[in-house]
Length: 286
Image 1: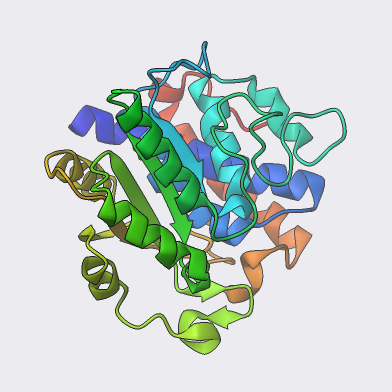
Image 2: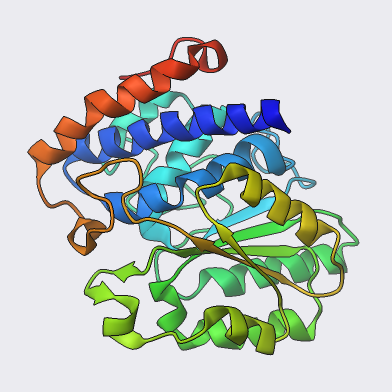
């Protein structure tokens, strides 16, 4: 596992740089929530998921749904570094002529399995994919990343009932619990109470982990795969803006606050990825 851990850490470092660089470049986007889920995506795309970048729609692939679609830069960084499209496309985020829209779009971007952005819908999409796998007698897994503020949506809890009712053991959901929304903390906006207890009550297998600890993320997936006949919720304690100190735990950095401060983050993030040049070959600090 150690070699795999160092690899995912290296790509997470590259992805953090990519996220800040592409948002700073276009002067538009959501850095805080993108950075909080980077480690989850790095583990999934570089260690866990069965995928084929050369054939994005390969029927046997595992599926991924970024329900918190405003964190698209994190997904795009993972897809680019995994080889779905050239990393040069990252410089065209939200630009006419590019393939990377402000929120994930299955019709525009290779590797995007679901068009998302309207919060609350991604879990239902993932459940539909998992049910389709069962009907097709397929063995692929479906992975979903939810935002914590997204659990305010009633559709999430309707979907939770459906997932448990059908015992969707091939569905693994990660809750990016950074405890901040656009308008404030979770407790200030709409207190979620005990999320772990709620998901257990709805009939899900639940794990609570550090969402920035790659070992814990990978162990959680392994445990989920060994527990059959019910869907899996992995509650990830995370930090909004992780890796960019000026943004960390700052609600305001849900979107852009100060372009100069974003730009000032880049040298440190670039220095971090240079520690892994043996893995990343020529670490890209475009």
